Length: 149
Image 1 (tube, rainbow, N blue to C red):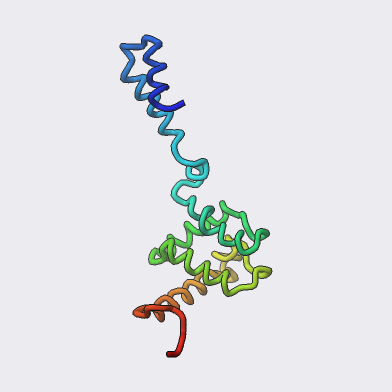
Image 2: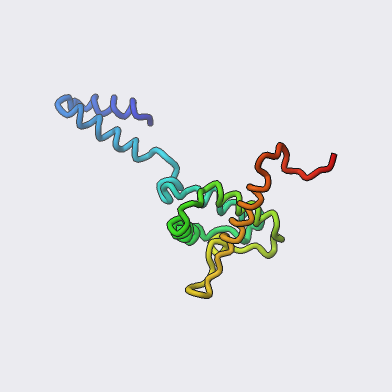
């Protein structure tokens, strides 16, 4: 059923004096239905599941999942490092995954942070540095392929 049909059905019930309230109620119902279930569940962090974690699954299906943990650690990482952007995360992750044997890649949440306190390992930050260095080295070049002519 679509929004217009729902409004017509409400109006057929002879609630003329409540027409504005009925239309508002129908709009609220349909507005609540818009968006995917993932968007409703994860909000603006849905990209962590659809883009970030899916990179790990594509490389090794056994290393997928842990979405809630990844979102939690991603939020903390962004809070601690406001200069890092989503595009940086995806780029650094792709660099890591392309450079690592699929049997040995970390789980997505462990790639961001593993351990507690002084023994915590932030592997993402190491790959973020490598990604930024590679990005800076490629500035001004037409092609990122190293060839001699």
